[in-house]
Image 1 (cartoon, rainbow, N blue to C red):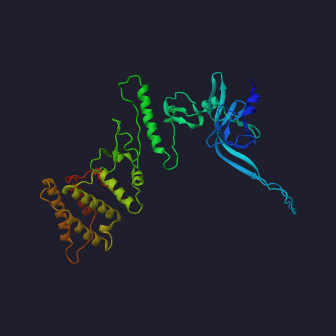
Image 2 (cartoon, rainbow, N blue to C red):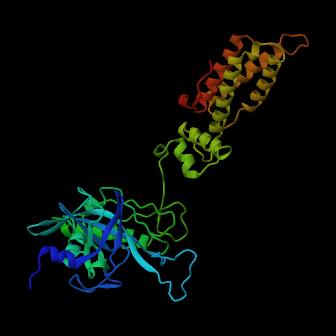
Image 3 (cartoon, helix red, strand yellow):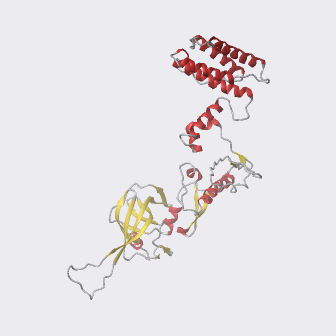
Length: 407
């Protein structure tokens, strides 16, 4: 016996549209709609269920919606005020409702059905809601072209094979969400492995390696053993333990700026951030945190003295009013005590240090008397800077490591 399209739609009807918006559709189920198992779609199917698919006929085909929640709205039996009839039983009249999330449109073609994401025509209030047939449901699940990576089976359509297009999957943002222990990590590892296997099976020359790259950031160590059988898999760790086959993770200094390094290390603003900033400046200027030679230590000290003298020079401390010149003299004595000769220094460095020590001793002798003038002229300070820069250069200091002058 043949049935008309209208009769077929009527046999699949389960409810009507009660509310509609761009992102959700509320449906009131009919009283005659199935309670647990639907038998009118060609084969027994559980209905209603979360994540199931429903359809709404429109001009261009069918709007496909996914069930997001189901509820029962109870209506109390009407009572008359001031009168109580003990002969009547107060029975509820339950109204079942569910919400659909619109996901796309199913269009009838000569070869069957074609599903595409998005809606061009929205349904209206009062439109009927129907169950998809087995063919229509399979068209929804198996939609898309170039699907060649098998990822699993769908329990919604008789365990039908679900395949994806890796070009579309990895060509856009993707999130794998779920509760703890639901299999998110296994799903991600499976997607990577299945994609590599599919690329290997579909390449033209079997002897060539697969030209695919996956970078997995694994802070919890969940993927360390997932790809041990892959010869080309490189596993890097921050901390290498004894007997560990992983490689040491090395991040180039230029890879991040200062703010990104502080964010990566979770540096506190007051203490850790200042230390990291100074450390990055030292590394970028060539002073790495290894066992430094005596020359490197001297160069770091002299560089700091040069910067401090330039600040004093900008403020006018050496030739200002008392006690500025006296403070500069005391600082100069401390600096001179730090610039000392070592037997391992080169002769050029020894000569530069001796010249600076001699100049400081000369300045001290000129101001050793009780009533001598303690201030310094600009020429004296410039002579000190020239000698210190010579020491800094002979000790191996680089010019770009020096902080720019003030003023």
